[in-house]
Length: 329
Ligand SMILES: [Zn+2]
Image 1 (cartoon, rainbow, N blue to C red):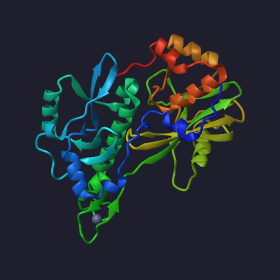
Image 2 (cartoon, rainbow, N blue to C red):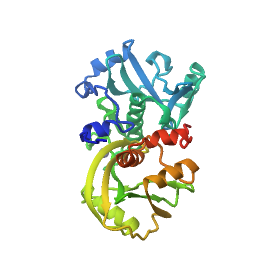
Image 3 (tube, protein in one colour):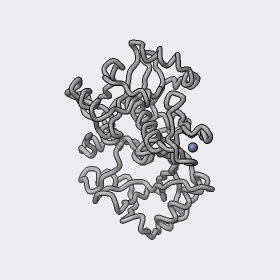
């Protein structure tokens, strides 16, 4: 059982990373090209309404619903579509739809609904989950930065949605999409791993430890600090594993493994409970559902499932599926 694959491959196995689109960075400032691309038959819009994605469900799972530009009445001339990129078949844009446009879209696609992507993506095709996550992240940033942070004037979208420029010409400050780095770490000790329960989570829900990286801190420093703050555990052998865009709302999750110096711990207010689990313990709690693990779309689950497979050769996700551990929305 080998996990001897490079970080790029590991990261690409994480949900929401499979956006193998050509992002067409060099086209973003070419208004003429963008206009022509939007007029072509292969243009598709990813509609977002109040941070929700347009999805439909059938027997195969959850599907992304894309619109042709002509299907959206009253296009918004102030906030033109944001260019996402293209694959070999289509060029994707994303648009925020108004309440009225939302009603029109749902009339056109009665089997679809505007849904929270995080839960619905459990049984979604990886590529399309990635495109929707990319769109969601850009919308969140655009929506949260409508005003200039320097002078308070309204910002305008620029560069096909990838840059905001202050409308006050004397200021003209530019800003770019923001992501917040966070670390997430599976702490192990010999044949056990540590999972904790955040006090705000539902009962029985356990996951790996995680936290935001602070200014003036390396990713590894953040791992050491977060784990110590939450559990008073000292670490050795900290290893970066893979990363995942996590647009809920704007994180970049950086995944690590680390070894605890000892099994003793003392939880802080940030944790309601923590427990060491062996592979057998995990099998048991999945079977009897006494613990609910993070959904398989999360890097938390991937870190745990990879560790589980390294130790026993079994597939934790299949085991969870068999016991109906995770359900789509
Ligand atoms: Zn300004």
